[in-house]
Structure formats: C-alpha cells, structure tokens
Image 1 (cartoon, rainbow, N blue to C red):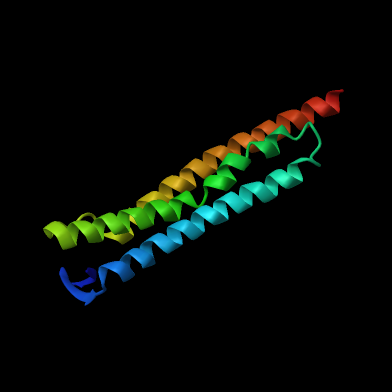
Image 2: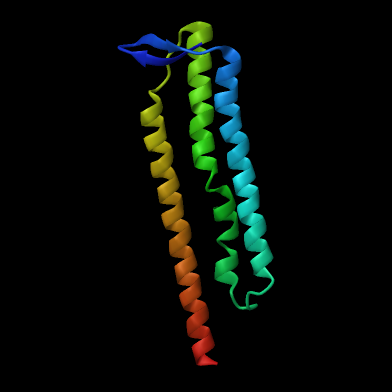
Length: 129
C-alpha cells in the first residue's frame, strides 16, 4: 500500500498488514489512555467537595480529548485506502489535521469559558452565604 506521496506520486510503500497495525494499534492505545484517564479522575472524585460541580464538568472533556488524534488517524486511513483502491486523493492530511485541531481548540475554549464562569458564580454564591 502506498502511504507517502511526493508530487502526487506514491514514493513509499508498506504491506497491508503492517499498515493496518500502524493505524489500529495507536487507535487502541489512545482508547485505552482515554479510559484510564477518566477512571483515575473518577477515583479521585470521591474526595471532591460536593460544591465542585464545575470540576465535574471537565470529565467528559478529559475523556474525549484523545478523540482528536483518533479522528485524524481515521481520516489518514481513509485517505490511504481510497488512494490505493481507487486512486482518489482527498484533502491533504495536514490540512485536515489543522482543521480538526482548530475546531477542537474552539470547543475547548467554549467549554473552559463556561466552566470558569460557573466556578466564579459558585464562588460568589458561597461568599454571600
């Protein structure tokens, strides 16, 4: 399978089994990392004070952060498979990666802004009491 291109022509090749291993093993490791991260945070969550709702909002974000490289790896696999099967070239992988990372950064900015506002509101309510 061609996996690297120079001037729109394939210049590096890999066997299909090796290619699948190089693409699926990182996916499995990223999934395991995501699962372990959330489990470790949930272990510590038992000791959080009940008023720390803002911190609990970060759990879904932490568990899904590794989805960004997984999306990029999936696109890369699709890109390589389509070229090898039909000689169709999609958007260059680096452009797709920049788009995904920018979108992920925007989502994180929105989520962190919401969490910071919620934490400030809770702190203000606690001060008034």
